[in-house]
Image (cartoon, rainbow, N blue to C red; front, side, top):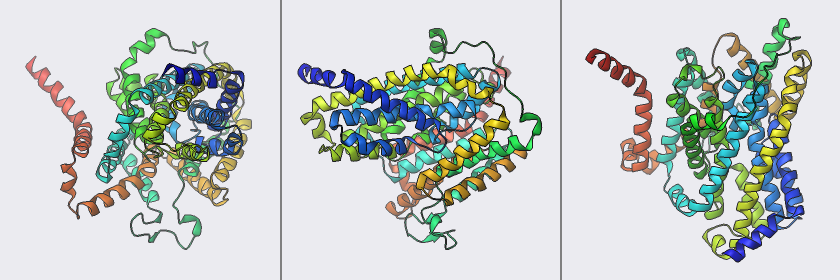
Length: 497
């Protein structure tokens, strides 16, 4: 063991390796911060170059891109209200709230700290218990994935706030959008209208760009009084103290567990994890009414979960050869190109390489913190640019980002359409998040429900014969009933007193 660990240390802790991990992390942060560009795209850009670097150096660089891109998405989410990628959607509300309150630097500091904790926690899990977690992930079938999607969709009720009816309408519209394209079971077209661009459905990233970026541009352009305004900043403390982290320790720990657990499940992605972590943080918060206005735990929870997904997604990738998400699918492809076969034998036969992977992830998280810390003072200056100058730049980046996803001009049209929808929503006080939840989870909800019904010959109650689904369903029901249950308990206590 010590000999293989020494080999891994020598492979990572040398000038060349540290330089390439550093370069990958910086590129990842830049990619994550640009609307529409994802970690998957960053890895794809660097893959041809990294193949020439060899297995250890190439994989270390790609892991730097992966870690950097995931955390970089919080920068535009906090400063502009535009999630750099779907993973940062849940950060927008409180990140923007804190930025509006004159504390953008503190919001970025919280995000960086949470990202580092989440990344290190999931790395620890990856090192210690990855084979066991991989076996748990294999026990998930259509009923369990349906239960997970159902749990996520119930968040529509909670994120709608006071606009419950409007939120439900927005959620239903999102579910309708998710049905566009080929039927997941029969292969027949739905709402395609003979347009080949709709055959594979409507991509999530152009929808996000339209809803958050182009919609915000339209709102700003419609209010001339705001176009010349520049936000004022408070003299703020950027990073949370140890006392503050201890205060939110339970929130951070639960978010890390949620993110790692969701990451382990192939095909789920971080979008579900960040919303589940955000809602859990709101429920255990001493000040739930502050969520959406700039609550620190409203940033800590989704950002911890977001980065915890990275290590979790590497678990099935390395132990089973099953990618946890799109980014790890490319990493899996890179391993294959290097002549390495992921699976249990990789841990036995290539133990030095596995230690190299672990140390590369560790250093990528370290570099992520260093570059984010160095950039915070620079990043917040974006808010000093008058909206009349900033919004056209955002619009151009949004159009480029929408096009870059599939190199398809049709996606620009999708972004513009959803930008108009977002503008209408904002002017009529319809929340955006329920619709995004519908789009994100609708496909999984429908596909896994129907696959499960096929598995149990149309008998939905057969799902309850699976303990994991039964537990997920029970948690979902309890979370929906909790507001009434807690009110009833308080009423009974008041009557008894």
